[in-house]
Length: 121
Length: 121
Length: 121
Length: 121
Image 1 (cartoon, each protein chain N blue to C red):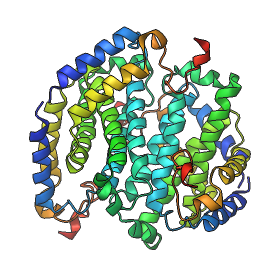
Image 2: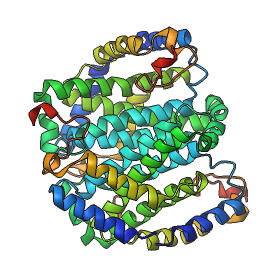
Image 3: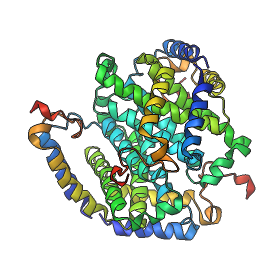
Image 4: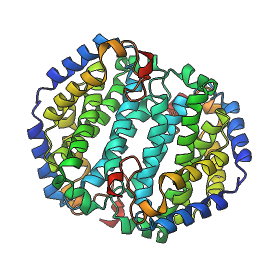
């Protein structure tokens, strides 16, 4: 994935519309939540099983794709403005998660690491 | 950016912990919103100007990077499970946005296209 | 419920801490989303059935109560600052929903009114 | 405010449409976030000052009222299903907040209590 290419397109898009003035990190974080919420809305009344079967509906998948794109575009724009390398940050976070959620404690259990009752072990 | 590599790491991570049972698209969309909200929280009480200046604080930037990574990891996992190509979806959405927000109507104005008062033009 | 009493307590609370400067409607709407997300987090990895059975866990219910309170406090503060009568707005919205979701079309079906395929009827 | 009256209207509304099957706490918490996000959307591109001046726009205030009502209705329905007394929970939380945010530490400073550097005092 060429994220720099996408970020450059977004920068040109904003420049041409004089939108940089509106795209503070604060406002972009609001946009990100809103787009994530629109994705959530698609799954809101579905059972978990129905949410897995959404791949069988072309119509619904079009919506899902568009919302996933929207979330990604806001995230890419925010990261660009803050000069954050998403890939590097993601790889680092995976390493942290391996420590936070060791297999022995996390097997079949998604309990958040800071809520886990360590006295039990 | 090698998103496939990241998605593969996440798949292994979930397999090892037997977490696939929990990672329905519905649940992942909830996680995505929650992580986006944690990013929002960082900017909540800052002015827009202060949110732009966050790049000058190493301590705050560490938090921002971690939350951006969290949002991306949930998005990458969700897209992988639904077999959606994020890059392709993002490029398509940029094309759609060019049509929805023509420069002539959008210059210096972020009003949502479906709220724009076209009578004014 | 004496919402005016709660709103008055919140106003005094903010006055005493000199917080009115931070409590713009924009910032309060961010806080509201964040608190709603913390409530969401409690239910994120539960099945729907488990989420219904949360009433049997005193420990979890303490968390739920606190998050419901947080959402309500942000909503009450925002409504107070904007001089909106929540009860009146809620009763009006129930009336609107009765029109948007007529029993004949909505029985056993939560599809959003603007997505409903009216050709089917 | 007569919240019991509103909760009873919502219960009848759901019964008549056979919607109780969809209204698990999990799903309602998703709806709550989504409605809070729609409120957020109204303020997203406004400056804080503009968000305070929204009271001067009848058209915008209609939208704000409707979204505040939507958030409240989801919260009221969720609290009813979980048998939580919102008013009581809110009053308790105000007491907790007085302890978490003592005037001496919080004057002109909204920093979250668990991020506050207590070494500084």
